Amino acid sequence: MIYMDNASTTVVDKEAFDIAKKYLFENYANPSSSYSMANDVKADMEDAREMIADILGARYNEIYFTSGGSESNNWAILKSCELTENKGKHIISSKIEHHSVLHTLSYLEKKGYEVTYLSTDEKGLIDINELRSAIREDTVLISIMFANNEIGTIEPIKEIGKLAHEHNILFHTDAVQAVGHLPIDVNELNIDLLSASGHKFHSPKGVGFLYIRSGIKLTSLIHGGSQERNRRAGTQNTFGIIAMANALKNSYETLDKDSLYVKSLRDKLFSLILENIEGSHINGDINNRLFNNINIYFENISGELLLILLNQNGVCASLGSACTTGSIDPSHVIMAISNDKKRASSSLRLTLSKYNTEDEVNKAFEILKKCIEKLRI
Ligand SMILES: *Cc1c(COP(=O)(O)O)cnc(C)c1O
Image (cartoon, rainbow, N blue to C red; front, side, top):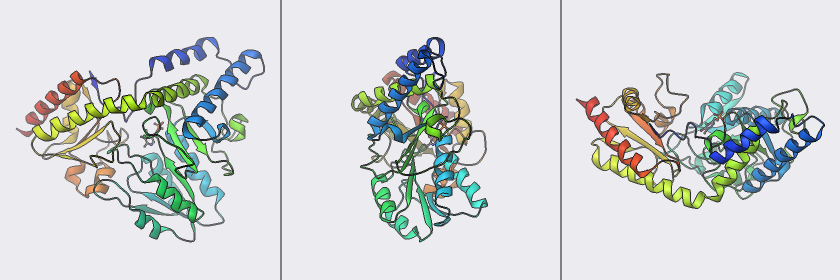
């Protein structure tokens, strides 16, 4: 089996797994309890918070643990709107956001909010000038993703944040695809709220965090106990949190080396496909792109059938977001960059990781070529 769907989820790091095991079998105390076993796990959890904060240039009390990217996005968007209710009910976002952002926004639209969805160019990039002219007196939130999960395009986060702050507007970014993959400093980039998810960078599923700039009095999305300084109730996923911090530290410690390696594999696979498979076209930008992302449009191919054939031949790939697979809606991201239904239903995403090999790249290419030939007969 060749796994090339790392934008959907990743394998857990061996070291992160060993750490998780420790907090499942040995120190499994509830961090809110009051005996030394609990105090120990609480201390380790706070160390994890500090580690994550350090990596992002944040302070430890600005990191809040959640169940993952979807919860962080829901929390950031729903509660920053509640916070600014009196100022206005206008939000700016983009057409290529993840569904956990888009569906939260459509929920708010039903509650009387107005949302401007910025379009992008054919490479998936938003236009800063379009953003500037979308800003109104009653704009309370700008939510734009850091890097797109389907085509890997990296948005101009620093400029967006600067513009938001010039107008006294909160800036949230869904950085689920960027954290662990790109250097991030929340202050340098003018970010107020940042969502991340552990399972996109080799830690267990069901754990993530939200960075909340201090001074922003976001209220709870989940009510109950006083965990997370009274802002996110529920017993913390200690094994996941501590494993996540470790996986994140590992990602950044070897990022230079790993990103070069993965990029070289990615570029090789990209050129093998584009040069040898007729009617294949890149989706997105070749340069301004996450180093592990490939997204290609194959003329006259059903993406769904291609995925089935690839699966039969041992290649795990995707049509775009995992959430879209299984529904027949063509990718909203490819639609946004091309306005071409055929393109949106004939595109394939391959996302690599440091665990892929050159041998896998060669094999995946051969399999892909044969599958395309078979489908085009
Ligand atoms: C995976 C992903 C999410 C959702 O994260 P979960 O932890 O799976 O809820 C949100 N946004 C982007 C860009 C993603 O890639």
